[in-house]
Image 1 (spheres, rainbow, N blue to C red):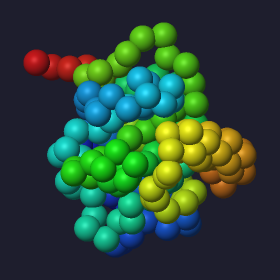
Image 2: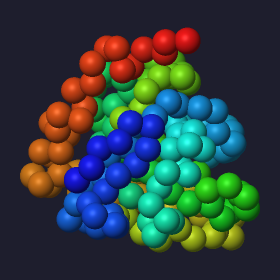
Image 3: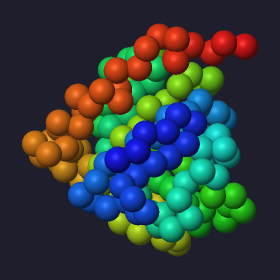
Image 4: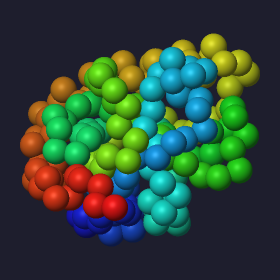
Amino acid sequence: IHRVDGGFAGRADRITVHASAFCRGQVVHGFGHGSKQLSIPTANFPEQVVDNLPANISTVIYYGWASVGSGDVHKMVVSIGWNLYYENIKKSMEKHTMHTFKEDFYGEILNVAIVGYLRPEKNFDSLESLISAIQGDIEEAKKRLDLPEHLKIKEDNFFQVSKSKTMNSH
């Protein structure tokens, strides 16, 4: 397993449900779909992180763990792909954390450990069917992340980020 700041890494040449992949990058503004249209807040990685994804990574929905800076680690789902419903022209990586944050965290460092696959990316007939699928993904991820093999990743040293790595030094 490789660990990359500002990029993405997985076991050898692909991500499987048997290997974890770790990603770290600064939170940027996305397309405005998550909170505004879906009422499902998302955090977005910059293009640099998405562009550093392995070429053969599938555009799918994954689940795993995430933290903001050196904060607590929470369950999450992440979409890597084109967001077919919205006909995006750029591939994106959008994460929804199963935790309510008190305020936005744009500019902070987001730490993500992907531990498993949920489903392929697909298009939807309506906004309602998209929301229903995402809510189903969230519920399924909650169950799977309670498995012992996934709980241990929550404690991985990857999430023990020093304060210096989480501060914006501009």
